[in-house]
Every structure is written in structure tokens, then in C-alpha cells.
Length: 528
Figure 1: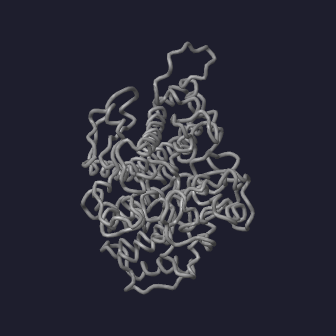
Figure 2 (figure 1 turned 135 degrees about the vertical axis):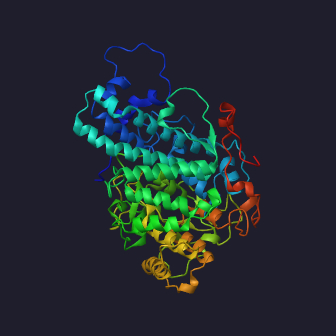
Figure 3 (figure 1 turned 45 degrees about the vertical axis):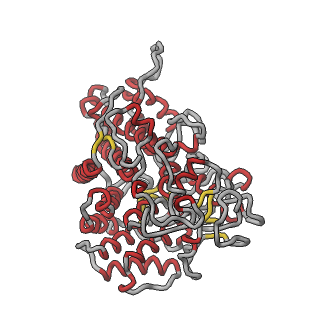
């Protein structure tokens, strides 16, 4: 059984709806479990922390749906992982979606507008998590805990919890900055209620995140390594490394040396490569020493239609004759195969015949994707994420997988290190970079490469081979200036042959149209 913080989250988290939004004006009985009473209960301090972590994977306080955090016609769409993954993958060369859904079709055609519902869902989910983090920080000051008579031993633990919450908040601001650029920063001192926060420039947001993460680390309350599924110093270093690798995009200034500095901390953090690549994406991947920060799922206790169940649903198809869905994915095909997406040849064509990372189903499939809505045997089915363990057994449930999503993992750190060295960063060396790359290729059974092979073109392809469908492709393509220019893939721009050079405004997502109508301090991104 996974040891996680998901302890009575459905009961404890229900208490805190009023901490983010004003309470309905109703008469409360003397026995009502109000927020004031909740915070006087010492169990609340870990329980609310559990709610904040659960925000990465769950959609509300009753799985797989019920007591939803965000109101939407499809509860599964409101999940943090599903909305983040959708914005990072559906618009790239790694995936073609087969659903007749205008919002998703606009994403993959790079033809979206500010009223696309996915921008609203992602924005709301991340700011909701930030609101929970702010409320936790407001209610866990020493002064407030002393006034409630909270024991010193609990207060000592809360110092660590507060550090975790601040890092989770910074992570959410990072992804908001990556997607939308200029965004508001709301912190615990801003309080609650209706007000219009000021918009910050992307550079200002970058600097705030950098300062916040460094402050959290320097205060020493994050564990060097922590419980599985919780943030620690290595997660903080990985977050900073992601920022620094993409800093030229975000701020106009390269920070590759700083990236290497942080990656040296991650790589020295006690993690090691998983010997078998496919085991990173199965039902017992919680045993892997490669995963730095996972989003946790459990087939019985942490369920929903917006996590790895969603990704497996994209992979599996009911309309490919003879596909052994249960044998491959370890799930019930009638319920869990959503006939959602394919890998185009721009992805599966990157792999050599011996590369074990090429987890695709090709029986009866054709190479070209010429029809996005009825070409069910076109392209390749992805078989990367499954509900099968490393020994071949299924997870605890055949509808909701036990498989965790590896948001940060060591292999990514290896490739980031090597790329930063090639881009001129100091503090690393080419021999080490080559060793990290070849360690990944050895695991994959692919031929080793020479130092001369370590070009930027190599890295944009190797990152796809190692990290496809893990949610980093959009950011990678933008960093390499391949997203809206210099590179083509099928259906880019809405045509089967693709349009290589597209409007550069699509390197940023627009702020949700509805948000601009309620916050007049916001200015829309250029071109929208």
C-alpha cells in the first residue's frame, strides 16, 4: 500500500470550502464544525495539507467525483493533471486527438481563442490550489496556533508543512507563468474576499518564484528527502532547474549555469535510474527510485477520471480490431478505453527498431493520419502508461489505475543537464553529459552516441524519445523555437500536411476571457 498524505481527505477538506469563498449566509448550530473549530483540532494541520497535495490528482472531496472543487459539466476535466497535460501535449507533435471536441481540436490546430474552456479550467485549478495554500499559511502562524493551544510538537511539524505548502504554491505559479506569461501573484497577506489583484510581468513572476523557492530552501524546513509523493529539497532544485533551462524564453536572459547548479543538487539527491523503462509507468511505479515527484493515484483510495485513468483512456481504443486492451493496459476495455488519441509518425518515427522506449501498438495501423475523426487505425496507439505492475499483474482495481504520474524524474534531470552544458552552461562538463545521455540509451537498448552527436537537434528528439506523453513537449518545442516556426508536423495549423511557420502569439496561451471580464487590472496577451 502506498504511504501518502491522503488521510481522511474527503472529510477534512470539506471543512475548508469557506476558507476560499465566502460562506453561504446560513445560521449555524452550536455543534457545527466551523473553520474556527476545525483549526482548533490538531488533526486539521495534516488533513488540510493532504487536501493541498490531493489537488494535483483529485477533483473534489469524494472520488471519483462528488463535492467537486470546480463546477464543470465533466468533472474529470477539472483535474490538475488532466488540464495541465492537455495544454502541454495536445498542441504538439506527440499526439493527435480523435474526439469531436472543438476546444481540443482548436488546441491541436494551434487556432485557439481566449474563450477555450481548457484555459479557464487550468487557470481556475491552479489558482484554487494557490488559494488553499494561502489559507493554510494564514491559519498556521505561531500566533494563531498559540491562541488555539496547539501543542509545541504539532507546531514543530507545521514548520515543515508550511515549507511544503510554499513550494507547492510556487510550483503552481511556475506553470501559470509558463502557460500565460503575465499573471497576478496572490499571497497569504492579501487576505480573502472579492478584489482585483494586479497583473505582474512574466519577469516579475519569474523573480518572485525564484526568490520564494530559494527562501524556502534556505530556511531549512524542507526535508532533504521526504515521504513518497511529498516535496523536498530535490523537488525545489528541479523546479528551479526547469525555470533556468527555459529562462531565455521567460525573461530574455539565459541561465544555463544556474540550471546546472540546481541539477547537480538533484542528481546528487540519492535517486537512481529505474532499470526497466516501462516500469516507470506501471501500477507499482511507486517503488521506483527514479521518481523525484509523483502525482499519486490509487485504484481504491485516490480515483478519478482526470489522472492516469485519463491518459490510459487516451491510449486505448475500442475501434482497433483485435486490440487486447486488458492484456496491455490492465483495465476494463468497455469502461476505460476512450478511443481518444494517437501518436503520429513525427513521434513514433523517432525510434530505432531496438529502442525499448518505443511503447506503441502497430498491428493493423497505418503510418499516416489522414482523418482525425474516423481514422481509428491510423498512426500508433501508445502503450506507455498501464495498470500493470512490473511483474505483470494488474492494479487493485480494473477501472481506476494504481499508476502514479512521474511529474519530475531523474532521466529528465540527466537530459536537462546535458542540454544546459551544450548550450554553454558552466559547472558541468561534456564527458559527464555524454555519460548521462548514454546511460538512458543503454537502458533503452539504443546505440550509444558520441560527444559530437550532442547537438540541439539531437536533444529535441531525444527528449521526445525519453519523455513523450509526460507533459513537457510544448515547453520543449518553444525553448528550441520549434513550436510556431522551423518545424512541421501533421495537422499543425489545421491541415493534414501541417503549417511549419505559424503566428508566434501561440507561444503563449491567452488569459481566459472570463477572467478579464471580472478583473479589469488584467491585460490580454498580445494578439488575442
